[in-house]
Amino acid sequence: MTHANENSARFMIGEGRASFYGNRFHGRKTASGEHFDRTDYTAAHRSLPFGTKVRVTNLSNGRHVVVKINDRGPYMKSRIIDISQAAAREIGMGGIGNVRIEAYN
Image 1 (cartoon, rainbow, N blue to C red):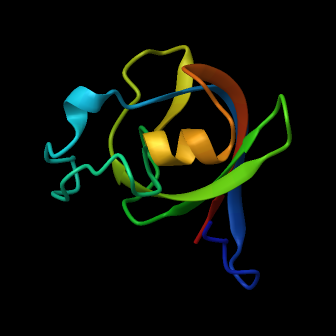
Image 2 (tube, one colour):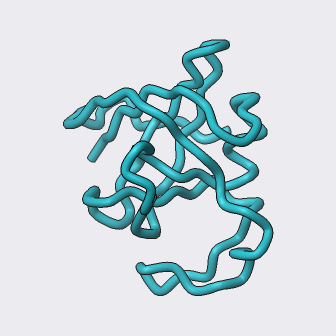
């Protein structure tokens, strides 16, 4: 698991629903130009700059992971972030879950 640098400044906090990318996206190009790898700790957010580190906490169990924003989305308005399968597994999230996101620069 990666961690946000303790010297980084937190600049955004939000809570809402999260989902994870399905297998069909593996290998496809993301909005940042990187290829999506479901085994990396990455995520999609509508507005955070590419490369932003985001701590995602599963509100049902308190487990967290740090992901890097490398894509745009989610496109369902009811969700605040899409995370990779590896990140979802790390925090014990199956399908859709309630999360807190904390962005760091």
